[in-house]
View: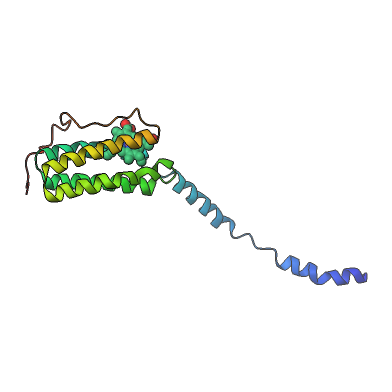
Length: 165
Ligand code: HEC
């Protein structure tokens, strides 16, 4: 054997020993398939949360109009939950950053409900509704105009009963 080959021999042996056994492939396939499943799994969209907020905004109004403070408290809680949902699931939407603008209106509404104060409720509701529209303007959805509801679309729900204390 030529001396140069003798010199290279340890390197060659080492290289052949270090060839990894390809037993990681099934694991990698499994990871790939799980990643695909996660990416394709259902997550509620911005518009779905907004439709839910729309219904709670409406119910909140009729609860307040009927001095039904427990229901009003529940409805503002549902709006808060939907906002948290957008923050959690719709991080890819830039508009999510604007959600903070709702905080003053929500705080004001919570205060009015805690005080069971119809006048404060009314002004907090107007502030809330204006904020909905301000955001729609800010994110170029200004064609989506929110207003104080005229009549409840929920003919199967009684806003004037239950424990109204
Ligand atoms: C962060 C800014 C922001 C705020 C605050 C906001 N919206 Fe929206 N709203 C949006 C965006 C963005 C869309 C469009 C969603 C989409 O891509 O489907 C939208 C869509 C809507 C829609 C249309 C949903 C549909 O599919 O028909 C309604 C209704 C709506 N918003 C109601 C409200 C109400 C009521 C409030 C206030 C309580 C509110 N929004 C506050 C950003 C906002």
